[in-house]
View 1 (tube, rainbow, N blue to C red):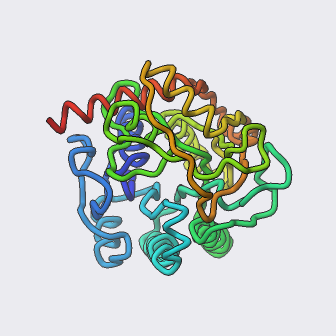
View 2: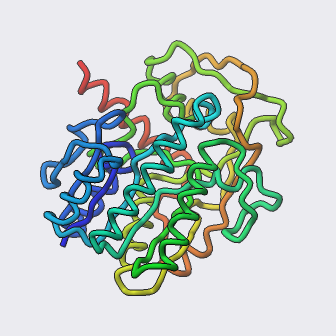
Length: 328
């Protein structure tokens, strides 16, 4: 039996592939390579280049490779872009996820892990936010993910099918062994952008809004190391395979850092100063969001190993240096 990782040539997906291979799993990657890279897929995994919306291709892969679980990362993730292109996000994140889920049911794949997001909460009333909080997404990105969660819930109620929807907070860092990392050009993730500024790949970086109702006026987020995140996915896979039922769980540390605090950490760890410009708020950005991840810890036995902002930054900076060597 094998695990299908959609979007496995991308940032989080490639880390998941390494995690699965390290655990002795057989892995198949399905990725259209719109934002991912074929070189990010380890040689030990099979790469199928294609779109998750191509149901004929997906059915063929699920049946011929004897897939017993799907870990679904493929999708669009830029919040402001979703505001300007909502239909594109509903197509890529919701409609195509529906097609993938349908193929899983038709082909008898019983286990499904979904890459969801803390954006389904919007700006929560209570922080840290628990999974039973109201869902009030403030962007089409968040809504597109929420809609897929609802489809998974209803599908699991009607079929022999169980899922884990893992709601990520802000994923950052890179594989400590430097096998993979965040490689997309034009990335919008704060730590990636700040590390590019620190390594001279950007002449400056921007802070979008300093008038939020937070201690320093900038947005607060819960940054989780990508290696801890994929470890939670593997534990969720074990949970599903053991027949313990569907689950929705937050993936975060419960520690919030502001934009200014992140920039200060990047400057400290890198030893570099760089220009920071203040701009207006971006549409769709929540004020502050921090996880209550007790369910993930208690249900899966998840124990984060990289819960330290400076360590996350150090690994992100290390990957930027590795990318610079690769692109010479």
